[in-house]
Image (cartoon, rainbow, N blue to C red; front, side):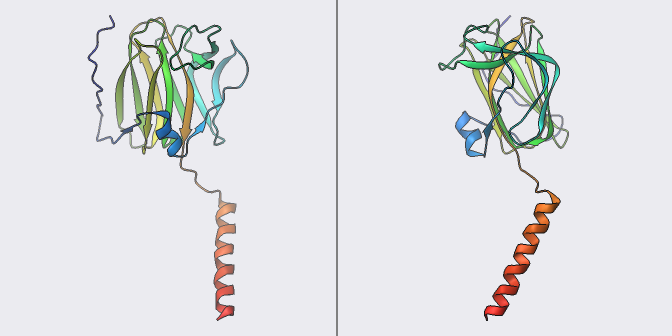
Length: 195
């Protein structure tokens, strides 16, 4: 257990283009905003709101823990809320509309390897293996259109994930498009009158 190759691997059911992010800075640069966890320590969630007014649904419930209170360790000095899989070896996150960038840290309970698989809007998938031996490890992607992602730990002792940041291309509401169209039309009329 715990011995997996250290290389990052990608696979897909059809051609998938994933730009893996190297750090949280990549997600913020893509317009990322922090996902704020509601509630308090030991609250359970099957769904949370995202910073763009949408939702993130979880398979089964996840439980809020706090580093270093009920979740003992993390990396890079982070203290704050994270989500625990409560011993489950897999958690899936479903986004209500496609996400163009997403990043978070994840740490297995037993400091083992785990896979993160993402499902693209075109039906293809891609995965990345991450080593949790050194504490919480960053995972992220940019420039993609992701409908869901799944975290799978090789041990059944569970894991926690947190410090989530996401970005998505916002589609303007019809009323906004009408106002934009009226504004452009008004500028065109004003320009003609000024000639």
